[in-house]
Length: 89
Image (cartoon, rainbow, N blue to C red; front, side, top):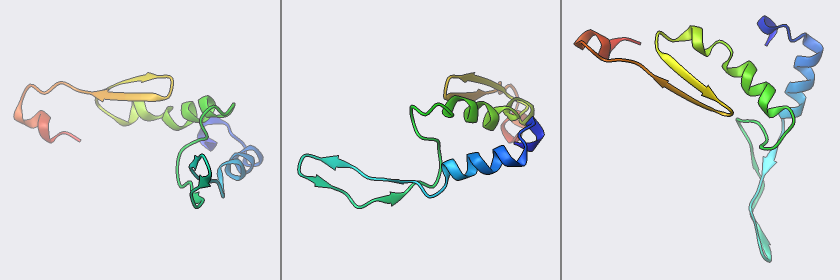
């Protein structure tokens, strides 16, 4: 995040926002035991789209492939022409 201009105060705030979250499932008359959320961003959150953009900003430069980024989804593809292309990372 720092490489994209997010200062340490904002980084601390975002980390706090994402830390110590739990989730559970409710059904009529019962509720599951809360479990920790270890990754991701709360769906429908105001920060979700911005955090997705920060997370994927370097993706295009990290691969010698062709990414398609749309909303909160990423598709990466490449062309395989020779056997060498299969071993490319």
